[in-house]
Image 1: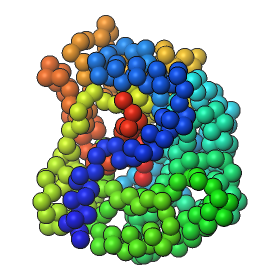
Image 2: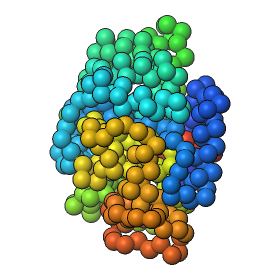
Image 3: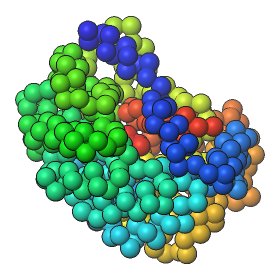
Image 4: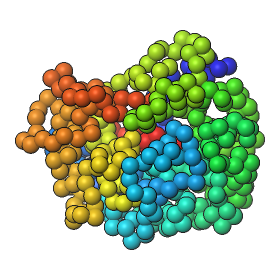
Amino acid sequence: MKAAVLDHLRKIPQYTRHARHARSVIQHGNIRKWSNLIRVEIERKLRRIEVKGHPYLLIIDPCNYCNLRCPLCPTGVKDLGRKQSIMSFDDFKRYFDPHIPYLFEAYLHNWGESLINKETYRFIQYAQENNVGTNLSSNLVTLSSDDINNILDSGLEYLVASLDGVTAESYKQYRVRGNFDRVVHNISELLRRRNLRKLKTPIIEWQFIIMKHNLHEVAEAERLAKKLGVDLLRFIPAGIPFDFQNKQELIEQMFPPASEETDIPDGARNPLTPIQKPGPCFYLYRSMVINTDGGISPCCEVYRKNSDFADLNDIEIDTGRIWNNEMYRSARAQFSHQNPTSKTATICDGCEIFSRPSNKQVTQRSPLENISVITEEPGSSQPQSPKRRHQ
């Protein structure tokens, strides 16, 4: 069973939620959005440095505080490299509104527990009212009865519930300060109320990170998923943030040993040697990542303030100008046969996640090379946190 699960994990593509993305493109699309999507995909295919398309997916973080202390998360180990804050509704609207004409989906999570911010429900409702689909990832530990009703009332379309075990003992090894029984109860109650109200959303996905201590619980997780009635149970591999210093220690502590990974290639077995994806980087064409403080990260794997590409509090929010600033153009140039008219150093310079032309060599040791989580390629079902690894 263990080998079969790990084999399944090895085969999972970077875009594992085709149906959800397809629904969003259809449900929330119009001529302007579809035209922009086609333009974006053509520009990515052509490896354009300066683009006319606009991001059609938005990753916007309502809150980068978290109630848990997960050992593979920079927020959990207090090493986020960014001031922690909670986004106001006014700031959300200011950041969100310029993107509305082009968006199919908004991911309302990134480096914290979004539901700590009680304005998140207003964010969801506002997005839905403006014909933008919404996704949210939560550990569901602090959920109250009112919170459950607020989720259902907000119109949220997709909810990822993070639950990495089927017993309190295994769950707490990663979800430090979590409460297994409370999470199971909250999932069950949320489904009960959703079904009682005959609602079709939110679709509820149970996300289970496979680690050394819970690998043996996969079959029981499948049974529990059926009992609870979740819409989807999704197993994903663990990953390590790119600049953690104790990687080897964490690998030995958290990852399934090689002896359990029969027939798994070394690249899939060892989180320090990921398999490269075809370039160019999809984040630089399809999605914009906005942090709680208004800082823009190039992708949802990058979290430190000193790696930001822009600060929405320092400039007039002109998405076209931001999308083509020197930082973005320099990053896209890493995947193009051409060179930009001017270039600046970015964290993308050493990224080895995506392949690049032979004439563009990595200029430094990759700051991202150690990411091994399944990164959902934004809009993968179109021509996808956080997700990003979203824990």
